[in-house]
Image (cartoon, rainbow, N blue to C red; front, side):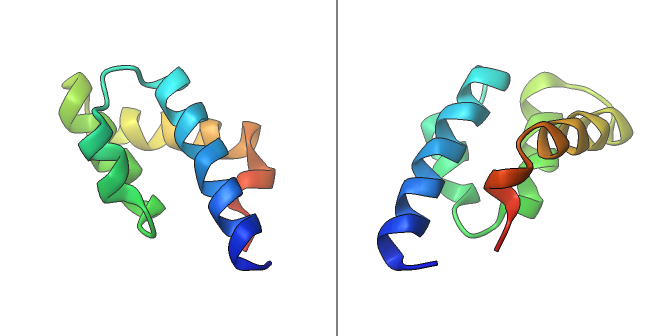
Length: 71
């Protein structure tokens, strides 16, 4: 994947995350760049939900958007 593809992939990812979890701020999403594994923690914090629920939501999101999580 070249640099332009990676940047485009990140832009699509950000848009889909904001659609799914509208309470996440732009700062939250910027912090995630390169650290997608931290998404569940941000979801948990913003929505005040249990860690397991946040992880389930992120897992479901990843499965629904598998093309965005390929390296």
